[in-house]
Length: 182
Image 1 (cartoon, one colour):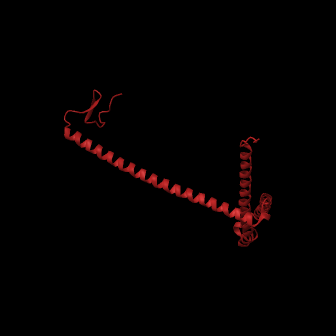
Image 2 (image 1 turned 135 degrees about the vertical axis):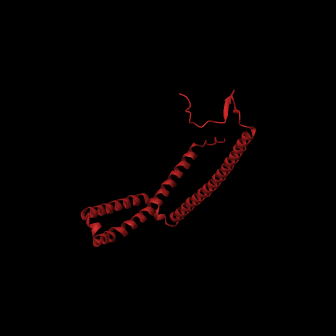
Image 3 (image 1 turned 30 degrees about the vertical axis):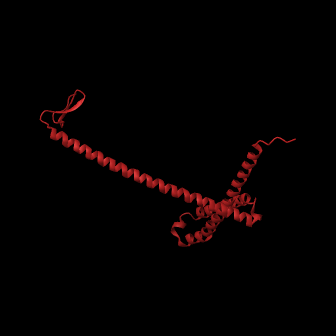
């Protein structure tokens, strides 16, 4: 398959492994192309610098975000420790309460589903039914989820503290004991 006659032809030919101007193309033209290539390289270098600067800014923002997250986790931990110290009667009860709260939410959600299935299209058509739905389930479920979230957070914290205590105990058991002195 040959090159079509109406194809754009280059002013350069491949000659012995080098790109050489065809006859008729002068050195001025080669110099102009080289200047254009240099300008393009400068533009690419500028874009690369801009990308590098943007990457550095993103890295700095990520570091700040990470630091804020670490601080928030530490503040939550301190708050939960303080709560546990101020109210020792709460310790060890959170996991059971969390399960009970989840059961209450599940029961309430089941009742909500029953209500919606019973009233079906009336919910879309009737302001009264919609108002009743919101009044009956909206606030209650919202508050139950909030309460469950608080209990779950304390329960998770207690589990984490128990794991840390177990790990510390295991590490202490694994440390070699000094030989008795006679």
